[in-house]
Image 1 (cartoon, one colour):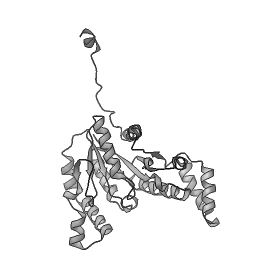
Image 2 (cartoon, helix red, strand yellow):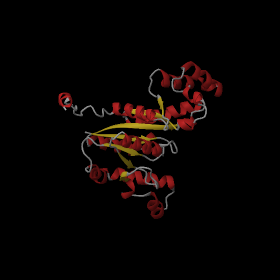
Image 3 (tube, helix red, strand yellow):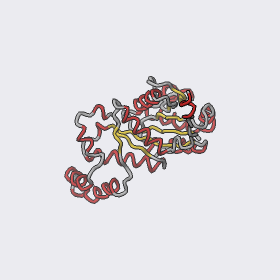
Image 4 (cartoon, one colour):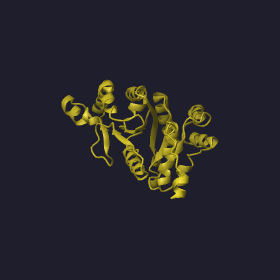
Length: 267
């Protein structure tokens, strides 16, 4: 069985930086992971690219040949990937062993994980090829400055959870860049009545019933929660990696290494 992370989130949320930091952390701890680029518009990488969608199709070629804009061109590239899952992706995955660990660095177009079925079909293909998959959803912590943005981020994450139907780990990225950490930490374990009061203050009275329903989704069903990520701290990266490993049951089938203590004593 293989293991995989699907790293998604809005543009600029730090997905590639997360992948790079994760690779460096695993290299330090002598753990092997393989980073896969699924962004046909990507140019520079801070990590070794194990698989690259640009070998199949690139955004520049699509824009030049078809006259599409950046967003339309990227959607065309991802749909082309979807059409070639059984050929290109299957052939690429054959280069990896059963227990290999892949991290897929995805584009930031929100359509891909909210309502377009490309990524859903992609992860279903991975599961058919015997991969345990976890979605890692990144949200820029600098975006979470008030309750309306917090609720917006929660709903975007929830949309991805419903669309992809996979275990999710939601991350507040770029915590190392936040100046007022207490302001962000208030939303890690928020009090629902305080959220509702603040939301009602910021919005017109006719939205109060909607506000109450949104807060109930966030609170009562515990469907969305975020883990802060500070890339300056190895412990922060390790904690998030352990949460993801737990979701995909990584290492549960590993053989126990038995050490011969009697031999050491004799030596």
